[in-house]
Image (cartoon, rainbow, N blue to C red; front, side, top):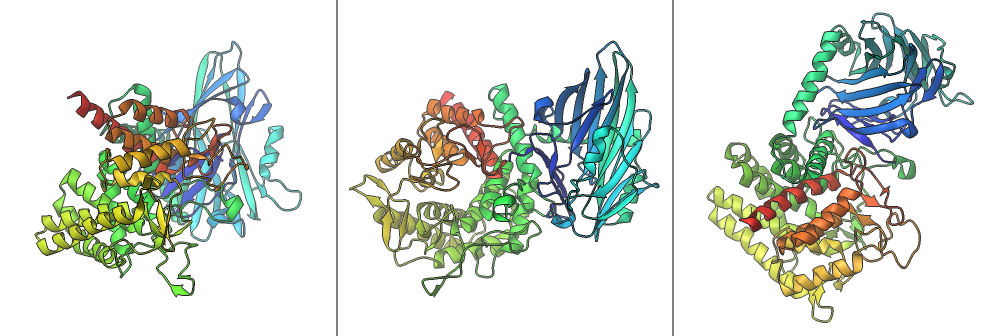
Length: 637
């Protein structure tokens, strides 16, 4: 299910579904634990005792506010218009919902708002406690080292007037949220086990007037963390949090602009928020906060793939946000293996994550890696250095990261100089892949550039020569006169000529010139074979069955955002800006209300498919727009 308005500060990350219900509530030192895991926090509105749970049918607006990582949600009920601002404070672990109600009728209205807390602390509902704490004037949920306290504060400095705690999901007990539907709460003060809670805030609003209140959840690792922040809560303090968070993101998102039309620039800034919200305080960057996929596989995308994270760090870096990239590089130095490669993926706290890549193939021990993940890290580090010329920051990575990885990449080659077999970027095939060759070529050239900077001429020559040999071997082994294009891989010694969008990498990472005749024929094949009938967009490769909606010979696969943007970036390099822009426009037309881009698109309905957001998709959009702006300016000069 699509996630909307991801909001985060590196330790907290919240996301909503299309009914404006919190469905992901990540919190820990490194935002590595999901304490909701797709179980919704409901939100109820009652005007003159006409109760309704908020859902998509009532929502008029659901977007980021202006150019900030602050949610803006508009809706109406019973003649009262509501505008909400949702945010996670940039410094404190506090989630805030600022509600403004406007009574545009000619009569007085009674309003009751119901806020439901549905925590699954540490991802499960075993042994939780929910209790009303008089000293907080709020509901506290806790287990072990995770504490969450919810309450309200209105413009008259009043807090909630009713509450309830109860048991959920046991037998016929659906949850305490059902207690709200008669407009009155039970005032049950404590429940244990599988529990939820609801609090009510009531107020009267005069004709043609407004009323405002704050709903907030404080997160901490113990009672003391909650108490420390709770004692600060006043109207003045909440106003301070609102202003500083709004101002921070307004300034943060304005560093670099692609200077395109207003709609495109707005989507660019929203993409920045989406990518940034998935970066934690350690330096990890998650692939997606969308936990809905847990229903299907009991595993998800809330991990750091070095590939996705490298591309996200690159996108933020070229958009002027070096801090996130710097944290990512620092973390990577501690993660790279002693042999010089990055693992398949990592948990957000930097520990090694679950992996389906085997350590043995056909009875032979192998490295369970995708070599492009190691290569992209070195390539992106060089791109960072090129932009910022930050020798003081970069120098410590030269030996511990660059040389270590480059030595591995120069040794992990076959007799032709090509990378030895590893898994492809799609995590499906074991072989020698065009995408791996391209990214490794770029990484070795980057390593050679670093060696030049640090005066290691022997290493510079070694890495550059290895890259050149790799490119020469690719030309000899991957191109076919019979097919008139490049193979996507060599598997078990045989070239695989399945048309694959990842072949665009041979241009995007500089291994081949974009106007080379062999490149042109390969890119033409991608457009001819992978353009999806109906909705448009580029599929990953011919007859892609991953998350296929149904068997259909007319649909080669689901269109992906990143693959479509790859082709847009290719067309920029051959000067076809009109075609590049049409592909960017296709991507824009398949965004969600808050700018979120999914992994895939349903080829029949045009709706998002698979995880949404996919950070990689929004990162590629950032890269594509900045490149488009740059190429357009160069053409005009």
